View 1 (cartoon, rainbow, N blue to C red):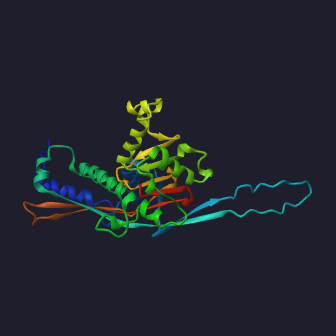
View 2 (view 1 turned 45 degrees about the horizontal axis):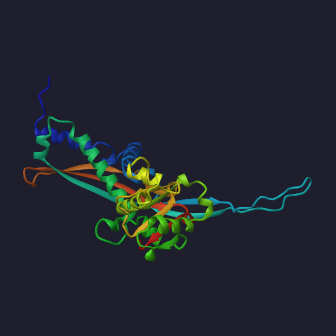
View 3 (view 1 turned 120 degrees about the horizontal axis):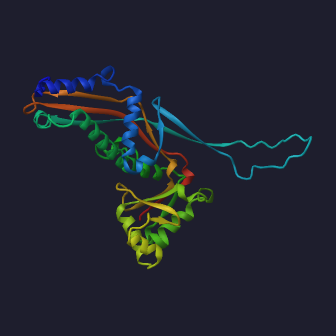
Length: 307
């Protein structure tokens, strides 16, 4: 039976497994895709977004539509002369490089050496932290503020800058989601997107989700009783109400969930670097990836502000 590895041998083995994934620590494309999909699957609401792989630095998303009432009658032996050209809405996604770095001390490794492989534990922790931050950035990113929000623009910043998004000013509506805010948002949504309400979602902050639930409960109806007993998912006119942990209290979004697009590249690296001068020694672990956030059809988005 082989002897247990000491701390130094264990660190050396971990270092080798972390860098021998490809040239310079680059993950093979299939492994990068698997990591992204695993991460998104546990990233809350972001797990439900449409996923778009971006090969080059940018990707063009074309949304094609054909005008309503384009159908015409036809007659025998008569050439059909009416041609309908589709309308193409184009969005451009641009990958942004992001990095996550975690320092693990030798003391921590020594205390965990008899437990589950620390390499696998770190990968799982990387995945959870990466997914949580992406879920946050997808809503709150503004490309301007601080060291985190500056990384990329999230939904609210993108929608505020888009003249084709339908805006609702809730300044005079207070916090009345049941009778004012949600009805105004639904009224602002074009009819053609209302046919399949199960595809729509209302994104609000957790506090505003609670406000709406309280308003339902106060009605003393069957629906209100169901919310009181937590017997059903929260909805407004068959539209799911999502309490997103990173939505601000001052905004609400109505759109089709598949309309939201998460873009990612397959250039991903996972590496480690020894830091012998830190305390008793440490290892820095790095994860590098490429991401972007966007939505497809501006006309299918309603943004309520001043909530």
